[in-house]
View 1 (spheres, rainbow, N blue to C red):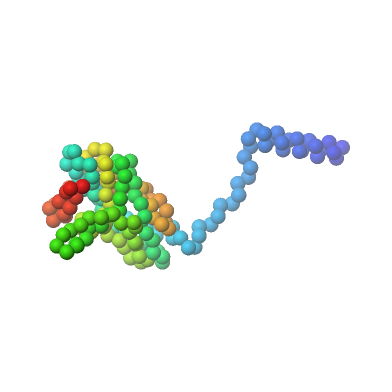
View 2 (cartoon, rainbow, N blue to C red):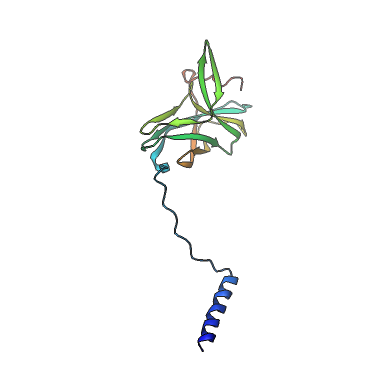
Amino acid sequence: MRKTLLGGLLASAAVLAACGQPAPEAPKAAASAESPPAADLTLQDQAARATPGGAKVAAGYMTIVNSGAEADRLVAASSPRAARMELHEMAMEGDMMKMRPVQAIDIPAGGKAELKPGGLHLMFMGIDAPFQEGESIPLLLTFEKAGVVETSLPVKTFTATGGADEHAGH
């Protein structure tokens, strides 16, 4: 009798496994103490620059505040509205203002990184249509420690003092 009961239990277990019954889930690992959660990062003053018809590039700005105890870095950005995106900086080289891509943007612990006209910023390359004031541009930001953060940038028209010509020639 014992053999039949054991055989029946084994057969039942095999049938359940064959039917695709899920195995019990293993407990999820706790977040590492070495990487701050995305909650340590706050995005402020988000905006994308409105573009004229026919423009193929656009710029995005924000302030990234890190209230955590460890520094982080913005390492990538993407948007369904652009063929590709780059992290950029503008800097004076002699008498000339130059724009160039950067590999990452540092966000110090307890500090912030400002992405603004005339400095660090996001570049939307190969945009699918002009960015029009009032719309919102979806954006994914990838941080070295905090991971991927989904957000959007409201489109605004900037004044001439906001560096209206900074992206001419792109």
